[in-house]
Amino acid sequence: MRDSLGRPGRILLLGGTSEIGLAVLRALPLSPDTEAVLAGRDRAALEAAGKTLRCRTRTVHYDATALDTHPALVADVFAPADVDLVVSAAGILVEQRELDADPLRAGRLMTTDLTGHVTTLLAVAARMREQGHGTIVVLSSVAAVRPRAGTYVYGAAKAGLDAFARGLADSLAGTGVRVLLVRPGFVTGRMTRGLDPAPLATTPERVGAAVARALVRDRGRTVLWVPPALAALGAAMRLTPAPLWRRVARRLDAQRLGGE
Ligand SMILES: NC(=O)c1ccc[n+]([C@@H]2O[C@H](COP(=O)([O-])OP(=O)(O)OC[C@H]3O[C@@H](n4cnc5c(N)ncnc54)[C@H](OP(=O)(O)O)[C@@H]3O)[C@@H](O)[C@H]2O)c1
Image (cartoon, rainbow, N blue to C red):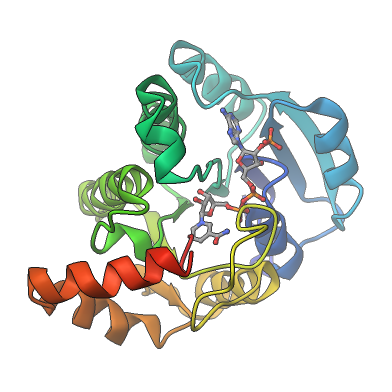
């Protein structure tokens, strides 16, 4: 449970080495008694990540593609005590031309970036419904808004995740459980290494600070664009006629911009 200052008692970060996920945890007001459970594949990397946080940490094995393990993992994390915050940050970005040559790899990306979130977060939602409280942060992307030829499998996964998160939020209305859907643009970091930053590029720290603000001070918010100017850009992207969108998207892809 949250303490008297509203600080979360227990947090689960799925994708426990995620630069954005860890930036969210660093930006939140945490008590030294807070426990952050870092879930991921590489134990040494998770332990190193845990040392950068100002709270107690524990690591658990989590493979987003091992769908049948997710209900037990969630049961294990929720068993000792309530979980106040779950950040679902596992994800991979692979260039479309590599996926065109390897459809199975495209399937694995869909499992990591979409299906694994669905199996995990449905189990999380059931536990939080029983608790009667909790917050789930889902990391979508501006790539969810409209597919581009250069990133359309990643875009399809994010569009599915975005729709899932909005439906989940509606299904949890009135239960005391909140879903915060985050749509960052291009974030400079490990995932986008080697790509030219897109216009309105941001950093994991800025995304972390914006998410923490929305969690602590803006509790009615359900969707968060980072940076906020992307909301208008997203609306324009939706309304752009298809032939024009194809030309714009081709130019972005050619410049390898907006790899998010
Ligand atoms: N960076 C951007 O431009 C950007 C923009 C918009 C949205 N996003 C989204 O934000 C989220 C976090 O991105 P980030 O920038 O923090 O990237 P990141 O630092 O590369 O983190 C990605 C995380 O996903 C984990 N992961 C990958 N495959 C996994 C699997 N099969 N099972 C379990 N964990 C797995 C990675 O773990 P390992 O250490 O084991 O690989 C890592 O912890 C992602 O969903 C991403 O799509 C990113």
